[in-house]
Amino acid sequence: MKRTFDIIASGLGLICLSPLFIFLAVWIKLDSKGPVFYRQTRVGRDNKDFRLFKFRSMRPDSDKLGLITVGGRDPRVTRSGYYIRKYKLDEFPQLINVFKGDMSLVGPRPEVRKYVDMYTPEQMHVLDVRPGITSLASIRYRNENDLLAAADDPDRCYIEQVMPDKLAIDLEYVKNASLSTDIRLIFSTLRAIVR
Image 1: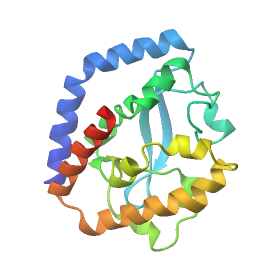
Image 2: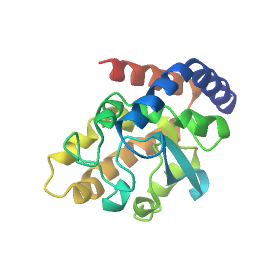
Image 3: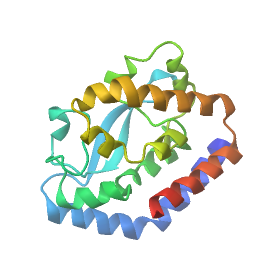
């Protein structure tokens, strides 16, 4: 049921949001040089790598300068990217990943290999399910970039504080996942974005 729901919802989402996709694509191209989409290798279900789609919100090759983004003051973020990230519009192309089966609408956020390699055996169980566009952890940490911006060492703060807490929340989701929980989390995400 979850996979059927993901296919139908992501397909309808891609159709309904296509005018917004076109607008954002034009804005990104006019604002800075580089591709419209940013594709990054993330770790998905069963510890397998996949390529995640996002609208590009940073200057090309910015990830070579670090994987952690530190709020609005990060100089790698473009002018359009600031607003695209603020309202989570950069995440919408992941509907493509959901439609393809790499991801689900709801599930633990997919992480890069560098951080997955730090997981404990217990934490590895977040990879028992498809990663999601949204989760309870991503709602609670919706201002994560601002939190990291205030840290003296953002990478250390992420590894020692943010990541373990998010994984604990995600592990609870994995143990108690259901379609009704997913639907509640989707509506909670929409409310958080509107707020």
